Length: 288
Length: 278
Image 1 (tube, rainbow over the protein chains, first blue to last red):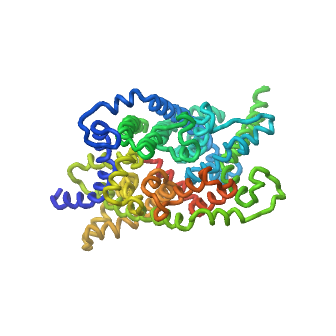
Image 2 (image 1 turned 60 degrees about the horizontal axis):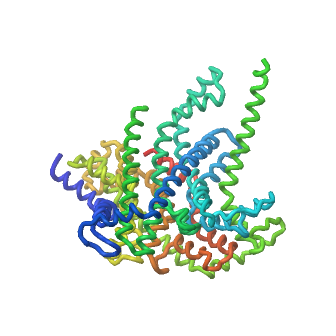
Image 3 (image 1 turned 135 degrees about the vertical axis):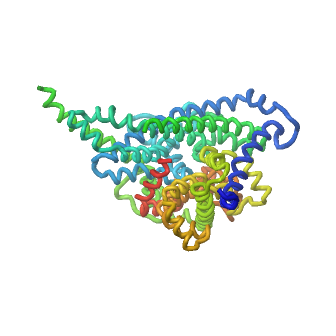
């Protein structure tokens, strides 16, 4: 390859690469650096483990971390399960499937902030719609967002509603690549619909499931918009999540050093998931 | 014998149940939007009372419009979204072409570095990125809200994939005709990748129209605040706005995107599917 071509390639890449470096790669390094050399808003205080020691002793951090892991561990499988059901439905000969597809997919394109405003009303204790519904059955209702035992689950419910339609699309794409011949062959053998699902559809969807799984987890750690409207992490951090806690530390408590340590934790989580994804993609190749 | 007679009946019931379930779920999924519509077009006292004879009223839209500067929020959102999109299309085209068609040393490493942004989006690094923005004195500007997203790993990836499928012969022919490198990109690759550009544009527009966390920290006045940040302030319980008005405001803020979605429904779904086939 000629020298000119080499230079030309780098010139074409230069604008994109410098922006990516400025807002992804360099900040990753400086975050790591800051976590060891700063305290509060002060930078370059010399090398110190102090921030990490504080992290270890910070009860709120452990609660936030466990919230985040629970939040991911519940919202991801539930929304994937619903997504699979939705995809199977709108891929079958159901009545009004284009309307259904529209209904399932709509939450995906609406801003989390705007729909959270509506959900806030559903959850409101005195006049909210959920308690109104419960009162028809003679139940006095719950304080969905104000009760520390319920607030995280209330957030999860909205997340599942928001995410399932998005994951449905991946399943739908995969379902459409499955050859109809397979089902024809199965029907000659007299296979039931359940057998079809268990023996043909689900195994062939395995690579998609793994892919969606990892991406859903990545997403679960990034999505915090609804916290700003619904709970602000409360009550008493019962529904606080990592990214929101980072935001709070940096922009409400002005402790950028501690925010940096928390970011390092989040980065480690995301990089581990990314590594898993590359492993998954590697394995996907063998499926084919 | 008995079982064979029963199976069709069971199958029929099962499929009926499954359809019912599908529709119940569908109704639950669309309900918040339908509810917002109901609350917005009726007087506040009907926000929780669903009566068929409830009078229609546009008063809530009027009130919402009075209470928040929707026009400037909307203009800011449109400006930010389009600014990001235009830069993304140009930068991703150049980078995607280089990665798809030019063999250079370090290509694999560069590609891996780019893909990192798929996992680590700029809002994860919000503290550092805010300080970068502050040092550039770009806080509260359109370009400031856009900067971290102008180079999109996803866009580069999609275009690289598409460019790879375009026959090399077309490029060679254009070269013989005397086209320069940039002309080749513009005249051969860009037109042939049109569906990818449309798909990517829809994903990018919906992402940035809806984005909240980064715009929240990168803006601090109405000069550059987008709809999502405006809605968060507007809908806060402290602001003392009632639900009907919030619903009206919500509808105003999602209407443009909703219309785009309804018009491009098929492309939207397909573009998200394309996003899935990474």
